[in-house]
Image 1: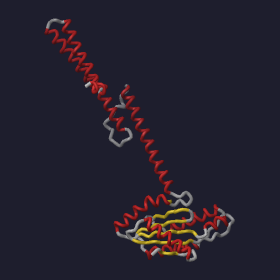
Image 2: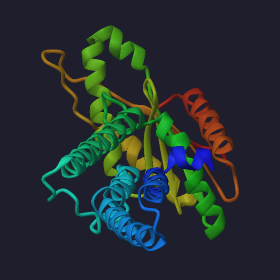
Image 3: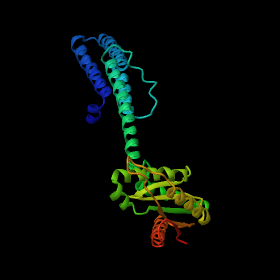
Length: 285
């Protein structure tokens, strides 16, 4: 009981009023020996204390309970239109306005944090040089695409595109020129990537294209067009002159296969394409 009184403002006020009533009864018994006078006095005191109780409940207890509700709702999406205390000109109103201002600031900070988290996630998923998605994005989104393909029963093709002799380009024309090559290759690859495919800068001079609902024949046609477009690119950097670029492409296609398994198969196909003389396409199948 004591712990409840300590926690509850209403219980504390009720206890004070009840104690006042008992003290008043004792005082009336000492002052007025007549029972009728004691009864009248106690009735009057009781009416006064009840009026005081309802007044305190209306002015203090209920508003504080409303403020408590408002404080609990800060940062949430719960409706708070029923809490209208800010119009009061006393301390309760001041506290209500402070809580509402705090809630507004919390919402602003939440929006900033959400925006910052989205920006950081975007930066973590993108290659800063080519602006393509990076390997992190592939391993976060790729499994979802494979799961969907397995449910719907269609094929997926994975293409690994590796630029030929890229170290020679960096050594001959300089790293800024090499960066220019990567940027232009990325632009060319985007032309062959549909909106629902995943185009990735896998690392260094290697790119990955995950093509949904694409079988072996279709993937080979796309790979040949990519190879031809990269070979025909006219890339210049400052006064270096034309920088020749070719690529070797490995492709794997299939149904009900794991992403890692298909990437490995496409990567092995790249090495076979390089062994075959580079600037060509090899399918893992």
